[in-house]
Image (tube, rainbow, N blue to C red):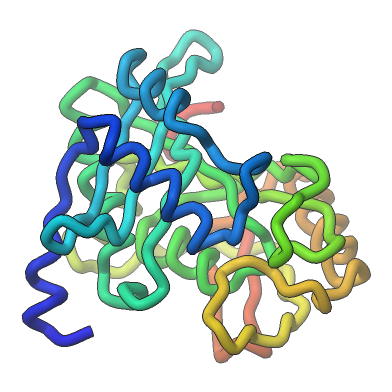
Length: 257
């Protein structure tokens, strides 16, 4: 995408039914969902009505990305669950996802909310790197087969295992990253290597049908054991797609969500 086209992308709230319908259609492009798996317009309407977030990335009149979050309460504390963040394939790797997350953060803080969370596939190294090293999220919960069987062809037959990313919006690590500084030093106590998953030629973000179940079960066991021992994902190290790892240690900031 040329620089002039990139700079023309505007981030703003999704308001109308037509704009929400565009979000629904973008799900088909990004995840190849069929009608059964699509988040419908009705949920976008409800999210907007009950204090959630719907932000879109617009290139002129075309929706090229969106972020959808719904409100939640845990242990008496409010937070936002960012259920979806999608960017059109031709607009990826140009900072649009980061811009959407930063607008979500700004809006949350303006409303007195200091934690956002979302889930992601533990085998997806690109997403892991973005969540940990770019945004400063931490992970200390793992859900096997979180969404149940998927009807999306890009999932193949794998269980929908998910890591829970916690984004403590005022934590030292987040403030440091957003100020252009490095993450604070941590005492790393355990390393969990990510089994290599071959890339997909069309740039699909989700795991391909040939990703092995053995790989998923291995990382599931290792991360769940580490979390049971009180460890937290604090860093993500990547030396290319074939050598990536989660680095875990003690987490001293944030709450106990």
